[in-house]
Length: 412
Image 1: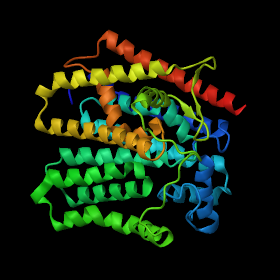
Image 2: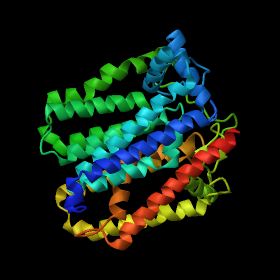
Image 3: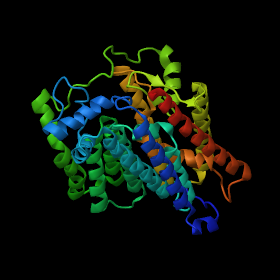
């Protein structure tokens, strides 16, 4: 997917670093603002997450049977418990854990895009900005919620997968790095477990017979050593390796009819630039506090970008070498896995048209989207395309400001 990028003069002045820094500053600024504006307990299942953290901080225990969020792996809550002990259980300061994880996710997305577009650093910064400017990402980064760690784990899994695909051999360092990434994902959240398994499959398929016992050990032992205790604890506490799932509402609803497809797609698309209440009530962003953003607009934007990406890939496929094609297929599989997993969860457990579950694949979606928006065969961006990018950033900032205004109005 690489080709000559922005003007060499701009690259010499490290334009990508300035753009990345600006994106991180905007993201962190809005996320920190949400930590102050959003009432404690107003974000998705926040009180349950906070109770999990306090259980570790105050009693050194994980949630027993009957308590919410007992099904969640413990790493996010261990991090939160450390902050809780240092700050005297100040929930708004505990929220800063999510802000830091969000910043690390954006940096990882940038790292993925730099691997994909080594000659177009500004494009990598653009991919990071696409995640940084998402109101949904900013909102949840200002909340106590383990999705923030899941997003980071998903981004690291994509980065590891891309590195594996681009490597000619599996070094012990790469094997260990991949193994530690899988271990992180296992301890993060169940929404990234399939992606973790996918990374292992990619490594075994990519190197096949060249895989030695030491490589297999470096891939698998970190998860066994670092995460195995949690499964043993579950077996003792609940009689199975995994705790029983906890529905988000008392009256369980599932995706059980094709007639729900339209509403499900609309709600999922809108949630990318939307906010949530307590996990059961959805609050849509009102543009500058006046009118909510129509779901048709969100659906149309996503549909246009998806179609444009398919066209750009089709037109570029013949010029890509085998390595680039492998990476492109990997990114596509990641996107499919995230989408199918979200649908299956809604069909079998709880109906949740929430884009936060799709953002585990942000490190695959953002570089593809940035490349599609800035797509060209050679030369600089055209005036029209450059103006469109500036307009897109302006719209994103308008949505960011509107999201914060909506949150403030909701809290009042």
